[in-house]
Image (cartoon, one colour):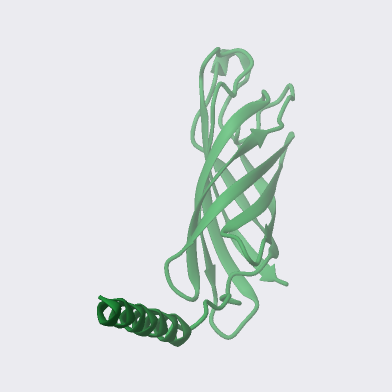
Length: 175
């Protein structure tokens, strides 16, 4: 009986030693530097209209975009400013998924702050938004090509329940 107990102790010790060796052999995860923060410019194209009789037509505008990437988490804070006849600010928080070293896709949620008389590409009323998109870092440079779609829910003042959809694209400088 005593020999079996000693044999169990030896087997448990060898198993623990083997597990510790296997854990020590696994390489540690490394952050990928290609996914940095950036500031950029571009264009925003509105695809939907509200009540056109009330002047809620789709719009195209200029775009200023910024992304702050948290290094240890797959999360970014993004803000897009759509500048045209009226201005809208769209801050979002996104969950980022890398496809490869240079490209990541994301899905964000936030608000469109566009409580204006004239319409913007995301309507003329403050609204909840969903923002899927993609960022591509140009190899061997600090340039980022970006694109996304903003779905703004209940976005028009004179068209209850009508959502706005817009496409944003541009070029950013990574820092």
